Image 1 (tube, rainbow, N blue to C red):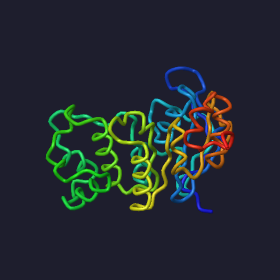
Image 2: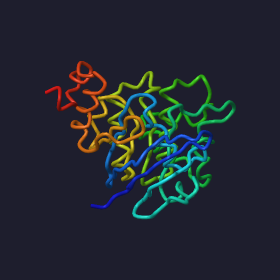
Image 3: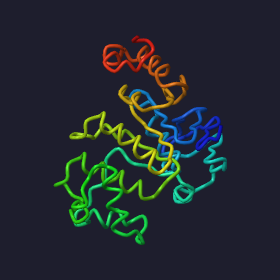
Image 4: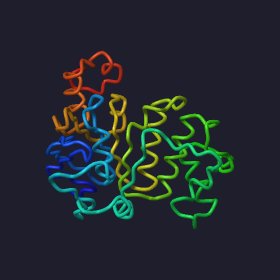
Length: 248
């Protein structure tokens, strides 16, 4: 099997404090795989996302990261982006005075309007959004869709999404997960989804559970979600979606 991302004993220290944030993380993501990282708040999920992108706040203290078979330990953030990895932050962008068109063109000024319109259509937004300002007049859901459209235009091999469902007000969760499937098929990418929602099992192929900076379990989503239910007392919530082997 060809892996898009593979982590071997990946460990991260804080660059500000002498503490270990992630310890010996091991898991892999295959081609066109949607992989969820689960865990309670503060367990290290977002730290993992930012560290994978090579953000300077986080210092790799051990292990190896492979992106499409290439060792990227020493790669800077922009180099990792060029190799096909991109990150969508939890809080979508908001820029006073910047139009949606300008925002979408920021990654590649050579894109034509037809390409921008296609990306917006994929996230269920009309092309009338191109001339709107990226400000507080847009809802959180609209800004999240626009951010995802900008990611689509980069045509990455791996999209890391940090809690994208946490700030969605108007997007029904099922619609959002359908959107992930559309993105995967349209650009042929893998998706690493940082979340704590059991509904992710509707689209996830595999999952990894992190607790206190360490991997507790990795494998099929429903099996991993079952372990999460045990640890977090989420059985009642999980039964609503039947995405947990413990809730059958």
